[in-house]
Image (cartoon, rainbow, N blue to C red; front, side, top):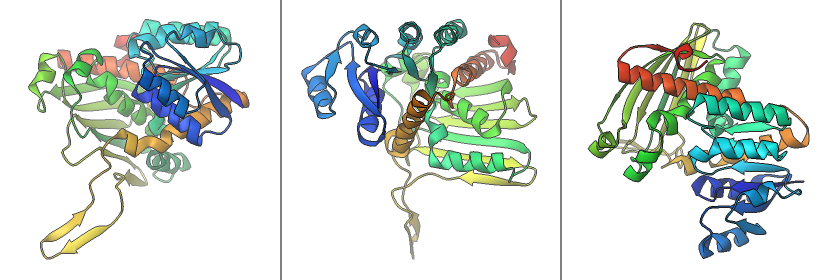
Length: 337
């Protein structure tokens, strides 16, 4: 049994807290911290069996009983807290992205290597049952050499403008999962990116300096081509689909729905809409990724989503942003390799 501390008690911090408490064997949450400790947070922590609630994460890092930390705080704090955690000898699970700055990411990876601690990045979709099914087929060679990898990712509704202003942009807070998925499904790194984007959902998003609709094409080192399409608003629900097409065949995954029931009548055929958002769609994957992290710590195994897996999608996001702004393909080597 290892003891963990969770830094950040926002939505994702609570998701991880609940999944560890209910589903992850071999880990116990000793403490959680947040910059705002309210009565509601204290009551919630008590209901989760978390003994300590701090307003200063350093108290978690200073606790010799805590073996590992989950960095679930705001994105701009991921890098400095991860460095501090490494220096304190804590194993680290860091939510994506590590940082939007390549230099700071490399500082984190250097600190982790120097400290000799485990470091895993929170790309939970790799642990989803559907995406794993594609990956297993690709690894088994069933589709031959990958030629085209397609990922569709569309949210059910646009986020609040306050979030848009601090998110770092759609490529960093949303598409970054898809950039990781292209690498995961293809087994190859991205070498060049061409992105186009528009504001079609909410004009306020454009005024905030972001986009809400995009298509990105990616060249891969193994010769394959990736295609991602994104939207901030799909009125029918959370649209998460993928396909890998290759020399020997293709494999696709569809959306998860509440049931597989399909009603057929004289007025048409009706099926259920996709699950509404990421908590409904990916909850089990959050538990599975933490279980895998705990296994790496307990049994001294390499983490399955390592520091380079955290770096590469950020490089792709930077290239996509540059491509959209300059209206041209951008090589990954241009943005900090």
